[in-house]
Image 1 (tube, helix red, strand yellow):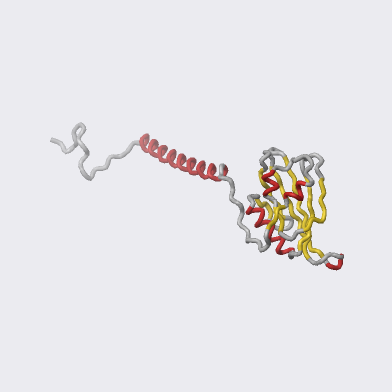
Image 2 (cartoon, rainbow, N blue to C red):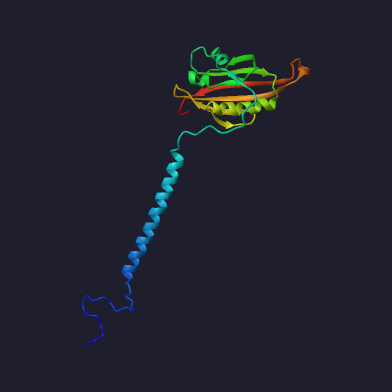
Length: 193
C-alpha cells in the first residue's frame, strides 16, 4: 500500500493543493469584477443622490430685525397684462416703513421686467441683512446675498422669476433724510432660456 490518496479521498492534513494558472486568473477576474461593480454602484448612488435632489431648502440667513410688508401691490401696478403669477407677488416683501419713490417698467421682449425704488429710514446694513433672510424665508433661492442681492423662484406660470435688490445710502446733503434707498427689480425668463 502506498501513502498516496486514492480516488476522491481528501488530501491528507498538512498537504497543499495548488491551483492551476487558469483558476488563479478566474478568481482574480471575479475579484476585480466585484470591485468594479461595487465602485460603479456606489458612484451611481452618489450621483443620483446629488443630481436628482429634493427641492432645495431655503438658505439660512440671519433673522432680520425689520418687519416685512408686502411688495406685490407696488409691482401689480406695473403689471398691465397680469403676467406676474400670484405666488411670485405673494413671496415678494420689503421692510416695513418703506416708501415707494418710483416705478419703471422695461418689459420689451419679456412678459414682465419692472423696478420699484423705495426709501427706508433703516441703515443700509439693516436693509442688506433683511433681503437675503426674507427672500429665503419666502422660498426664493438666494443666489447672491450681497449687494446686489439676487434670488430666483419658480412661478406658477411655469417660468422662473428673478429679483435683484440694489442698496444705496441716502445723504441728507442731497435733500433726503438719512436712510437707505433700494431698487427692487423683478423680471422673468421662460423656462429653457
